[in-house]
Image (cartoon, rainbow, N blue to C red; front, side, top):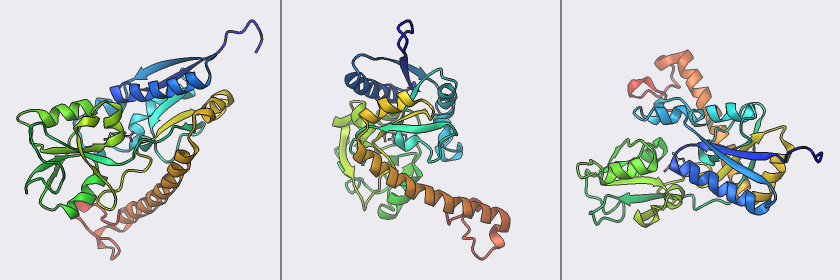
Length: 279
Ligand SMILES: NCc1[nH]cc(CCC(=O)O)c1CC(=O)O
């Protein structure tokens, strides 16, 4: 760098939710510690996923809801690094963007949080008909089999909103299931009464890990990211994401198959609403 050039400020960006801001600050602090002579800034943005809080998540159309606006800012060079919960990052990134670094993972499990004032601790403790809040198809699909007498109900909003919905005196929920990592990072750790481990509940792909997305042509950003990367987490998440990509290909195949053949096809396993149960 020529002596007259001003040193580059690296700007880290994420969604504006409290959890996203905490996560971005974790990455900024790790980078600032590794590179004390460099300048790092943060920028927080509202995304399409934040605007639509009422519709069920699985109807909203894909995980890129939370990343699209941020990726535009990254590509335009308005910001230099995006900090994501790795589990919210689609398995295929846009042309010109890549994951440059992955920080050490928190415990990836999901945890149970029981409504204030109730003394139940586990899913087994909850009386028949209790309402458990989660907006995750993954969690409901796994738990409905093991706990047929519990009622699983959608709950939306950021983590603080969900906790307020749980504890409201007129709330229908007896408990929520949330990712432990998010709860811990937001300081709600003391409210968790049980961790849900496999084979009861398998966590989401890359849950608990933070990923840094960069422009593929930004060699400086890539070097900075390498220094804060926890290679074991990176490998674990790479393996999990590779499995997910295969499953997504199978799902695409089925959706196309149903669109072309419809319910008349012998391979189509019909379900209410005409969705493909093979997915
Ligand atoms: N689904 C939204 C989401 N995306 C990332 C986290 C926090 C946990 C993480 O970083 O993996 C959460 C909350 C949750 O699932 O309870």
